[in-house]
Length: 315
Image (cartoon, rainbow, N blue to C red):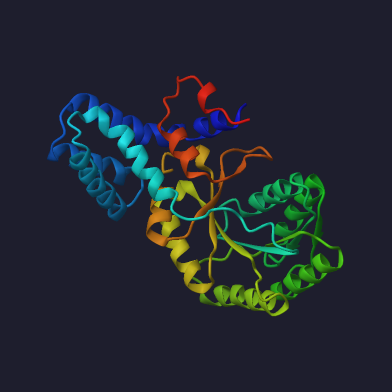
């Protein structure tokens, strides 16, 4: 399956919950009036973009309609696609993986968001690009987390640095970094416990790991990625705010986009937090963790399900 088609198919539920409702609305309403704007705003809120983002988007839409002298409601849909792409594409979203190694990537997030799977797929992505990868199993609170990472390490073909269950996570992070240096690794990916974002003591442990890494390499961690589950909608934004207060997040990984109608949350995250979405999870396969591209995402979201893939296909 081609890359664009896979992305488009994964956004099917979000398209039904958002774009198809917009398309049905503009077909019925024909003319552009105040009630049309109000209904568009309601659709956006229902798609889990968040009220503030929905209001801003509709206001921008209103301004563009006036400026471009658009009269027919059906012309609103492509304009809305354009505005959403602008919101999503304002900041550089490339992962910092090409600086002199080891590049340190710290991965954080609450339990159940797909963090371990994301780490395994990210290791696979980096290795596929010719980089030597090491994983640090600093989630020592949950014994199964270490075992799961070892399974991923074996599957992908990368080393996993671990301590015993209950060990100091910061010590694991330190030893992982020393191993990455000694083995000339290009990328070190460090797992952390699935911390409840409301627990201040666990957040303090996260800060400790951060300090240990920075003491060894002043620029580390080069990436601090928060993994969020798209199916949780607006709750994902609340999680991101709290994590960002504890440590400086450099990017978001949004997982499970293929299983939710709440994919609109990606727009709310980017706009309200000013933290770029850098990776998205769109399926169960090893290569279903993708670098986020605003234009591609917007095109996939707004492309009708029965359209030909040819003109959008990416080789």
